[in-house]
Length: 332
Figure 1: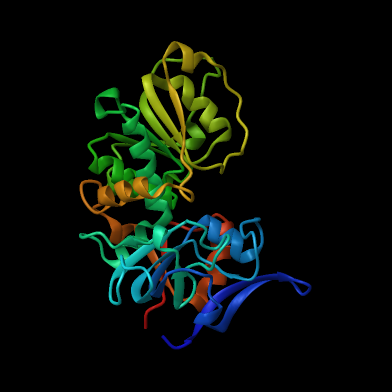
Figure 2: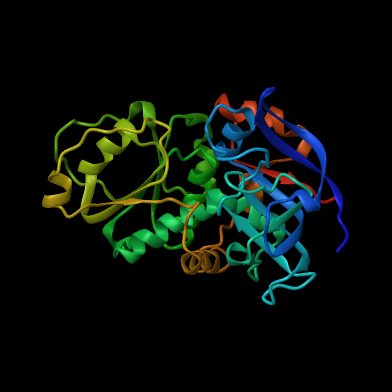
């Protein structure tokens, strides 16, 4: 296939400093891979905002196109598993860290991390989900693999007004769990209830006793916050409940005791979406396109932008002013 010129949001860090912006490049300059894809949609995650502004050390080499998510159509492939016209997606897997990401009209992917678009999802749906939805579903998969069931009791979702939190409410509800949403944004509670939250709890009014053990209140939790929130949740878990941790908005450290673990058998499960093995990725996307597919993707996708609008989106997100999921539209 001929070398194609296209637009991308490209990030540099060199003698002229750290900078990101729209530029024209050619497909021949893209990272190595077997599958060349014309990108239709991407999304904006907190990690993308950090990378795009330089306020977080995300990229491990430069220059690279930003965007840790991508979905589009194959235009050329040297791997027999993919052919021209196939709809595919990719999340994490080194995008915008060690290889060019989804903020370009074309992307070249490694075949082993390229996921055929599952039946039941459109390309846009897959990017409303993106890394955020994948992370929420991966957390549920890890919890259920460790014997989590709805019978254990309600699931607390912290940071419930964020992208992962909103999708988790929808996904866990679809899977049969009662979800209690914890958020500091009380003005969003009606919206969260509309996604499936059975109860909404104001983070500012949530008082933890500080005791090593307290009366059990939750069957499990998905924590996007860490810090004092994680420490406070652990003593509230039912016996053999799971707390999946996937974020650190409240800090990277927390103080706890061994008591919830050795008295109630509580498990603390790490959720690291970027490096997830392929067989687990396939299981997650099978659920996301089937029995766990959120009912409210169109509501959760609160904003759709173009490449040119990304800088403003990044600043908005880093200021804590974003709400819901932002989809990036690259197809014309």
